[in-house]
Figure 1 (cartoon, rainbow, N blue to C red):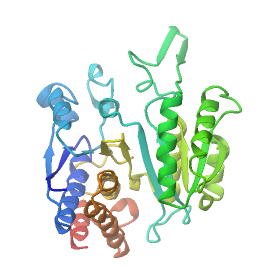
Figure 2 (cartoon, one colour):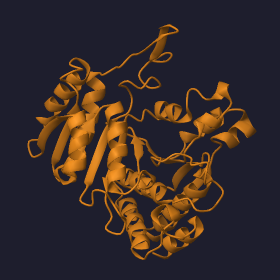
Figure 3 (cartoon, helix red, strand yellow):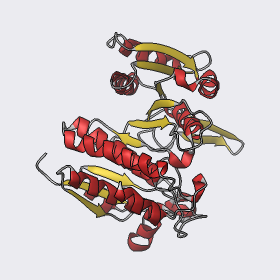
Figure 4 (cartoon, helix red, strand yellow):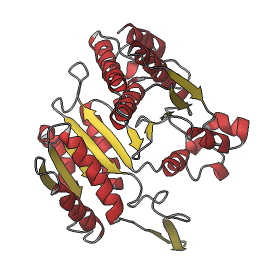
Length: 352
Protein backbone atom coordinates (compact mmCIF):
# COMPACT_ATOMS: atom_id res chain seq x y z
CA UNK A 1 0.00 0.00 0.00
CA UNK A 2 1.61 3.24 -1.11
CA UNK A 3 -1.14 5.69 -0.21
CA UNK A 4 -2.12 7.33 3.06
CA UNK A 5 -4.69 5.32 4.99
CA UNK A 6 -7.57 7.73 5.50
CA UNK A 7 -9.80 7.42 8.57
CA UNK A 8 -13.27 8.99 8.62
CA UNK A 9 -13.78 9.78 12.31
CA UNK A 10 -17.33 10.28 13.60
CA UNK A 11 -16.95 10.86 17.33
CA UNK A 12 -20.64 10.83 18.22
CA UNK A 13 -22.33 11.55 21.53
CA UNK A 14 -21.74 11.03 25.23
CA UNK A 15 -18.37 9.38 25.83
CA UNK A 16 -17.69 9.15 22.09
CA UNK A 17 -15.51 12.28 21.94
CA UNK A 18 -13.48 10.84 24.83
CA UNK A 19 -12.88 7.25 23.69
CA UNK A 20 -12.78 7.62 19.89
CA UNK A 21 -9.68 9.87 19.86
CA UNK A 22 -7.85 7.39 22.11
CA UNK A 23 -8.46 4.61 19.60
CA UNK A 24 -7.63 6.72 16.56
CA UNK A 25 -4.44 8.18 18.05
CA UNK A 26 -3.24 4.73 19.10
CA UNK A 27 -3.94 3.32 15.65
CA UNK A 28 -2.14 6.16 13.88
CA UNK A 29 0.90 5.68 16.11
CA UNK A 30 1.12 1.92 15.69
CA UNK A 31 0.59 2.15 11.94
CA UNK A 32 3.48 4.62 11.74
CA UNK A 33 5.70 2.11 13.51
CA UNK A 34 4.92 -0.32 10.69
CA UNK A 35 5.61 2.21 7.96
CA UNK A 36 1.99 3.03 7.16
CA UNK A 37 0.85 6.65 6.97
CA UNK A 38 -2.59 7.35 8.41
CA UNK A 39 -4.65 10.51 8.24
CA UNK A 40 -7.78 10.87 10.40
CA UNK A 41 -10.47 13.40 9.50
CA UNK A 42 -13.17 14.28 12.03
CA UNK A 43 -16.57 14.65 10.36
CA UNK A 44 -19.80 16.10 11.82
CA UNK A 45 -21.90 13.45 13.55
CA UNK A 46 -24.41 13.22 16.37
CA UNK A 47 -25.74 15.99 18.57
CA UNK A 48 -22.88 18.35 17.68
CA UNK A 49 -23.82 17.93 14.01
CA UNK A 50 -27.41 18.84 14.85
CA UNK A 51 -26.06 22.11 16.25
CA UNK A 52 -23.81 22.78 13.26
CA UNK A 53 -25.75 21.27 10.37
CA UNK A 54 -29.28 20.65 11.59
CA UNK A 55 -29.00 16.84 11.27
CA UNK A 56 -27.16 14.12 13.21
CA UNK A 57 -25.67 12.73 10.00
CA UNK A 58 -25.31 15.58 7.50
CA UNK A 59 -25.06 15.02 3.78
CA UNK A 60 -21.54 16.45 3.75
CA UNK A 61 -20.47 13.73 6.17
CA UNK A 62 -22.10 11.01 4.09
CA UNK A 63 -20.45 12.32 0.93
CA UNK A 64 -17.04 12.46 2.58
CA UNK A 65 -17.22 8.81 3.68
CA UNK A 66 -16.67 7.65 0.12
CA UNK A 67 -13.19 9.20 0.09
CA UNK A 68 -11.97 7.34 3.19
CA UNK A 69 -10.53 3.85 3.67
CA UNK A 70 -11.97 3.10 7.13
CA UNK A 71 -14.80 4.56 9.16
CA UNK A 72 -14.37 4.96 12.92
CA UNK A 73 -17.75 5.69 14.51
CA UNK A 74 -18.55 6.53 18.11
CA UNK A 75 -21.88 5.89 19.85
CA UNK A 76 -24.95 7.98 19.13
CA UNK A 77 -27.65 8.95 21.61
CA UNK A 78 -30.68 9.19 19.35
CA UNK A 79 -33.08 9.34 22.31
CA UNK A 80 -31.73 12.77 23.18
CA UNK A 81 -32.28 14.21 19.69
CA UNK A 82 -35.34 16.29 18.79
CA UNK A 83 -38.20 13.93 17.99
CA UNK A 84 -38.19 14.75 14.28
CA UNK A 85 -34.49 13.77 14.00
CA UNK A 86 -34.54 10.44 15.84
CA UNK A 87 -35.53 8.30 12.86
CA UNK A 88 -33.88 6.82 10.99
CA UNK A 89 -31.08 6.41 13.56
CA UNK A 90 -27.63 7.39 12.28
CA UNK A 91 -26.30 3.85 12.62
CA UNK A 92 -28.96 2.53 10.27
CA UNK A 93 -28.12 5.21 7.70
CA UNK A 94 -24.42 4.35 7.86
CA UNK A 95 -25.06 0.63 7.45
CA UNK A 96 -27.32 1.26 4.48
CA UNK A 97 -24.92 3.76 2.90
CA UNK A 98 -22.02 1.35 3.06
CA UNK A 99 -23.97 -1.83 2.38
CA UNK A 100 -22.54 -3.14 5.66
CA UNK A 101 -24.25 -6.50 5.68
CA UNK A 102 -21.98 -8.25 8.21
CA UNK A 103 -21.61 -7.47 11.90
CA UNK A 104 -18.61 -9.26 13.41
CA UNK A 105 -18.44 -9.40 17.20
CA UNK A 106 -15.70 -11.42 18.92
CA UNK A 107 -16.00 -12.29 22.60
CA UNK A 108 -12.84 -13.57 24.25
CA UNK A 109 -12.03 -13.52 27.94
CA UNK A 110 -8.79 -11.92 29.15
CA UNK A 111 -7.04 -13.57 32.06
CA UNK A 112 -6.58 -10.17 33.71
CA UNK A 113 -10.26 -9.20 33.55
CA UNK A 114 -12.86 -11.02 35.67
CA UNK A 115 -15.21 -13.00 33.42
CA UNK A 116 -18.27 -15.15 34.01
CA UNK A 117 -16.95 -17.52 31.32
CA UNK A 118 -13.14 -17.39 31.43
CA UNK A 119 -12.84 -19.98 28.64
CA UNK A 120 -15.04 -18.19 26.09
CA UNK A 121 -13.49 -17.36 22.69
CA UNK A 122 -16.17 -16.99 20.03
CA UNK A 123 -16.85 -14.89 16.97
CA UNK A 124 -20.49 -14.07 16.31
CA UNK A 125 -21.17 -13.38 12.64
CA UNK A 126 -24.47 -11.56 12.46
CA UNK A 127 -26.44 -10.87 9.30
CA UNK A 128 -26.87 -7.12 9.41
CA UNK A 129 -29.23 -6.10 6.62
CA UNK A 130 -32.57 -7.84 7.10
CA UNK A 131 -34.45 -10.04 9.60
CA UNK A 132 -36.99 -8.43 11.94
CA UNK A 133 -35.22 -5.09 12.28
CA UNK A 134 -37.55 -2.55 10.77
CA UNK A 135 -34.86 0.00 9.93
CA UNK A 136 -33.02 -2.46 7.71
CA UNK A 137 -35.32 -4.83 5.90
CA UNK A 138 -37.56 -2.62 3.74
CA UNK A 139 -36.69 -0.75 0.56
CA UNK A 140 -39.18 2.00 1.38
CA UNK A 141 -40.54 2.89 4.80
CA UNK A 142 -40.47 0.93 8.02
CA UNK A 143 -41.01 -2.79 8.49
CA UNK A 144 -43.37 -2.02 11.37
CA UNK A 145 -46.95 -0.88 11.05
CA UNK A 146 -50.17 -0.60 13.07
CA UNK A 147 -53.43 -1.56 11.31
CA UNK A 148 -55.27 -0.30 14.41
CA UNK A 149 -54.07 1.64 17.46
CA UNK A 150 -54.17 -1.59 19.45
CA UNK A 151 -52.33 -3.87 17.00
CA UNK A 152 -48.66 -3.59 16.04
CA UNK A 153 -47.04 -5.80 13.41
CA UNK A 154 -43.54 -6.31 12.04
CA UNK A 155 -42.29 -7.80 8.81
CA UNK A 156 -39.30 -10.15 8.99
CA UNK A 157 -37.30 -10.73 5.83
CA UNK A 158 -34.83 -13.55 5.14
CA UNK A 159 -33.41 -13.91 1.63
CA UNK A 160 -31.22 -16.54 0.04
CA UNK A 161 -28.75 -13.97 -1.26
CA UNK A 162 -28.17 -12.23 2.07
CA UNK A 163 -27.95 -15.53 3.93
CA UNK A 164 -25.45 -16.98 1.49
CA UNK A 165 -23.09 -14.03 1.73
CA UNK A 166 -23.13 -13.99 5.54
CA UNK A 167 -22.59 -17.74 5.63
CA UNK A 168 -19.55 -17.38 3.37
CA UNK A 169 -18.24 -14.70 5.70
CA UNK A 170 -18.67 -17.04 8.69
CA UNK A 171 -17.02 -20.05 7.08
CA UNK A 172 -14.13 -17.96 5.78
CA UNK A 173 -13.60 -16.69 9.33
CA UNK A 174 -13.74 -20.21 10.73
CA UNK A 175 -10.93 -21.29 8.42
CA UNK A 176 -8.77 -18.64 10.10
CA UNK A 177 -9.80 -19.80 13.59
CA UNK A 178 -10.65 -23.30 14.89
CA UNK A 179 -12.64 -24.55 11.87
CA UNK A 180 -16.00 -24.88 13.59
CA UNK A 181 -19.25 -23.11 12.66
CA UNK A 182 -22.51 -23.25 14.60
CA UNK A 183 -25.63 -22.20 12.68
CA UNK A 184 -28.22 -20.62 14.98
CA UNK A 185 -31.88 -20.46 13.99
CA UNK A 186 -35.41 -21.13 15.26
CA UNK A 187 -36.63 -23.31 12.41
CA UNK A 188 -38.81 -25.42 14.68
CA UNK A 189 -41.14 -22.40 15.00
CA UNK A 190 -40.13 -19.91 12.29
CA UNK A 191 -40.01 -22.66 9.70
CA UNK A 192 -39.99 -20.61 6.51
CA UNK A 193 -37.81 -17.66 7.51
CA UNK A 194 -35.16 -19.06 9.83
CA UNK A 195 -35.64 -22.41 8.10
CA UNK A 196 -34.41 -20.79 4.91
CA UNK A 197 -31.50 -19.27 6.83
CA UNK A 198 -30.53 -22.69 8.21
CA UNK A 199 -30.83 -24.46 4.88
CA UNK A 200 -28.78 -21.93 2.92
CA UNK A 201 -26.06 -21.98 5.58
CA UNK A 202 -25.94 -25.78 5.33
CA UNK A 203 -25.62 -25.49 1.55
CA UNK A 204 -22.68 -23.13 1.92
CA UNK A 205 -21.12 -25.52 4.46
CA UNK A 206 -20.67 -28.09 1.70
CA UNK A 207 -18.03 -25.82 0.13
CA UNK A 208 -15.94 -26.06 3.31
CA UNK A 209 -15.32 -29.78 3.96
CA UNK A 210 -12.57 -29.01 6.48
CA UNK A 211 -14.93 -27.03 8.75
CA UNK A 212 -17.03 -28.80 11.37
CA UNK A 213 -20.68 -27.70 11.24
CA UNK A 214 -23.47 -28.00 13.77
CA UNK A 215 -26.69 -26.13 14.48
CA UNK A 216 -28.68 -24.93 17.49
CA UNK A 217 -32.02 -23.30 18.18
CA UNK A 218 -31.42 -19.80 19.49
CA UNK A 219 -32.84 -20.46 22.97
CA UNK A 220 -30.66 -23.56 23.38
CA UNK A 221 -27.68 -21.59 22.09
CA UNK A 222 -28.13 -18.96 24.78
CA UNK A 223 -28.12 -21.65 27.46
CA UNK A 224 -25.11 -23.43 25.96
CA UNK A 225 -23.08 -20.22 25.77
CA UNK A 226 -23.52 -19.94 29.52
CA UNK A 227 -23.00 -23.64 30.29
CA UNK A 228 -20.11 -24.59 28.00
CA UNK A 229 -18.88 -21.64 25.92
CA UNK A 230 -15.54 -23.28 25.08
CA UNK A 231 -17.38 -25.70 22.77
CA UNK A 232 -18.05 -22.94 20.24
CA UNK A 233 -15.92 -21.06 17.74
CA UNK A 234 -17.82 -19.16 15.02
CA UNK A 235 -21.56 -18.61 15.43
CA UNK A 236 -23.54 -17.45 12.40
CA UNK A 237 -27.09 -16.23 12.75
CA UNK A 238 -29.68 -13.73 11.59
CA UNK A 239 -29.98 -10.15 12.76
CA UNK A 240 -32.12 -10.23 15.90
CA UNK A 241 -30.66 -13.46 17.25
CA UNK A 242 -27.17 -12.16 16.59
CA UNK A 243 -27.84 -8.96 18.47
CA UNK A 244 -29.02 -10.82 21.56
CA UNK A 245 -26.36 -13.55 21.53
CA UNK A 246 -23.48 -11.15 20.97
CA UNK A 247 -24.51 -9.04 23.97
CA UNK A 248 -24.74 -12.21 26.06
CA UNK A 249 -21.32 -13.37 24.90
CA UNK A 250 -19.84 -9.95 25.66
CA UNK A 251 -21.09 -10.05 29.24
CA UNK A 252 -19.82 -13.60 29.67
CA UNK A 253 -16.36 -12.54 28.50
CA UNK A 254 -16.11 -9.58 30.86
CA UNK A 255 -18.43 -6.70 30.05
CA UNK A 256 -20.51 -5.20 27.28
CA UNK A 257 -18.33 -2.14 27.75
CA UNK A 258 -15.33 -4.11 26.46
CA UNK A 259 -17.01 -5.50 23.36
CA UNK A 260 -15.38 -4.67 20.04
CA UNK A 261 -17.32 -4.76 16.79
CA UNK A 262 -17.10 -4.01 13.11
CA UNK A 263 -19.76 -3.65 10.43
CA UNK A 264 -18.55 -4.46 6.94
CA UNK A 265 -19.39 -5.18 3.33
CA UNK A 266 -17.03 -6.79 0.84
CA UNK A 267 -15.19 -3.48 0.40
CA UNK A 268 -15.97 -1.19 3.34
CA UNK A 269 -15.42 -1.48 7.08
CA UNK A 270 -16.77 0.56 9.99
CA UNK A 271 -15.34 0.26 13.50
CA UNK A 272 -18.02 0.87 16.11
CA UNK A 273 -17.96 -0.48 19.65
CA UNK A 274 -21.02 -2.28 20.98
CA UNK A 275 -21.57 0.00 23.96
CA UNK A 276 -23.75 3.10 23.98
CA UNK A 277 -23.07 6.77 24.62
CA UNK A 278 -23.17 6.44 28.44
CA UNK A 279 -24.30 10.06 29.01
CA UNK A 280 -24.22 9.51 32.79
CA UNK A 281 -20.40 9.44 32.78
CA UNK A 282 -19.73 11.66 29.76
CA UNK A 283 -17.25 14.45 30.42
CA UNK A 284 -15.92 12.92 33.63
CA UNK A 285 -12.81 11.44 32.03
CA UNK A 286 -13.42 7.91 33.31
CA UNK A 287 -14.81 6.17 30.20
CA UNK A 288 -13.15 2.90 29.22
CA UNK A 289 -11.69 3.07 25.68
CA UNK A 290 -10.94 -0.66 25.38
CA UNK A 291 -13.96 -1.51 23.22
CA UNK A 292 -13.27 1.34 20.82
CA UNK A 293 -9.59 0.48 20.54
CA UNK A 294 -10.50 -3.16 19.93
CA UNK A 295 -12.99 -2.15 17.25
CA UNK A 296 -10.36 -0.14 15.40
CA UNK A 297 -7.95 -3.08 15.67
CA UNK A 298 -10.62 -5.33 14.13
CA UNK A 299 -11.12 -2.83 11.31
CA UNK A 300 -7.38 -2.67 10.63
CA UNK A 301 -7.16 -6.46 10.52
CA UNK A 302 -10.14 -6.59 8.14
CA UNK A 303 -8.53 -3.95 5.92
CA UNK A 304 -5.14 -5.66 5.91
CA UNK A 305 -6.72 -8.97 4.90
CA UNK A 306 -9.01 -7.46 2.30
CA UNK A 307 -6.33 -5.39 0.58
CA UNK A 308 -3.36 -7.66 1.19
CA UNK A 309 -1.27 -5.42 3.44
CA UNK A 310 0.54 -7.40 6.11
CA UNK A 311 1.79 -4.18 7.71
CA UNK A 312 -1.74 -3.11 8.54
CA UNK A 313 -2.55 -6.55 9.92
CA UNK A 314 0.60 -6.46 12.04
CA UNK A 315 -0.42 -3.05 13.37
CA UNK A 316 -3.83 -4.45 14.32
CA UNK A 317 -2.20 -7.30 16.21
CA UNK A 318 0.12 -4.89 18.01
CA UNK A 319 -2.80 -2.67 18.98
CA UNK A 320 -4.59 -5.63 20.56
CA UNK A 321 -1.38 -6.63 22.34
CA UNK A 322 -0.96 -3.12 23.72
CA UNK A 323 -4.44 -3.24 25.27
CA UNK A 324 -3.70 -6.64 26.83
CA UNK A 325 -0.36 -5.42 28.19
CA UNK A 326 -1.92 -2.29 29.67
CA UNK A 327 -4.59 -4.31 31.45
CA UNK A 328 -1.99 -6.86 32.60
CA UNK A 329 -0.03 -3.98 34.16
CA UNK A 330 -3.03 -3.24 36.37
CA UNK A 331 -4.16 -0.12 34.54
CA UNK A 332 -7.95 -0.07 34.48
CA UNK A 333 -10.75 2.47 34.47
CA UNK A 334 -13.45 2.40 37.19
CA UNK A 335 -15.77 0.07 35.25
CA UNK A 336 -13.17 -2.66 35.76
CA UNK A 337 -12.51 -1.75 39.38
CA UNK A 338 -9.51 0.47 38.66
CA UNK A 339 -8.75 4.11 39.28
CA UNK A 340 -7.24 5.15 35.95
CA UNK A 341 -8.76 7.97 33.95
CA UNK A 342 -9.35 7.68 30.24
CA UNK A 343 -6.29 9.85 29.63
CA UNK A 344 -4.13 7.74 31.95
CA UNK A 345 -5.18 4.55 30.21
CA UNK A 346 -4.40 6.16 26.85
CA UNK A 347 -0.95 7.21 28.01
CA UNK A 348 -0.05 3.70 29.20
CA UNK A 349 -1.44 2.29 25.97
CA UNK A 350 0.98 4.47 23.99
CA UNK A 351 3.89 3.22 26.11
CA UNK A 352 3.21 -0.37 25.05
